[in-house]
Length: 148
Figure 1 (cartoon, rainbow, N blue to C red):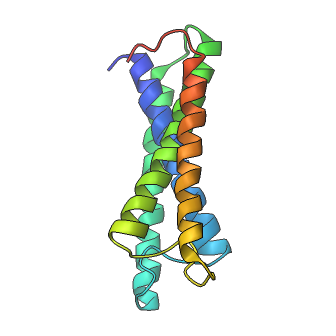
Figure 2: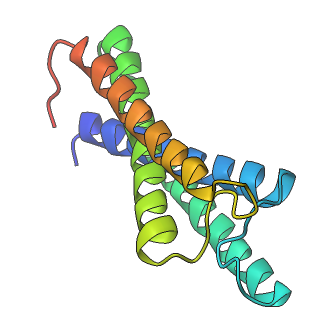
């Protein structure tokens, strides 16, 4: 695998894993709005959250290893923009996939099920994914050429 491709995939995975970890820390632990499988016995909720955190931790580690293996970039300025853009795209992808699959298709939890309007929170979560994707795409557009 080319070094630049390792950097691109590693950046994407770091963003994906980081937003997954942020979701778990903020919504599952700090706010305690939901767990991965919200309408389940406490033991199942704890196990599902633990498996989720383990998966996003592995994703972050894989991204970091790929970035490390990619070595020093030849053009640091465009490499930072590429890495930042792909990090944001990875994070946005997490929010969109998690929101569409878990909140809407599987309906295993909502962002804030006890809210007066839980759909509003779910839609805001999806919107955050779209915003992150857009910001990443705009940042990537400032890079002269991506060689994937």
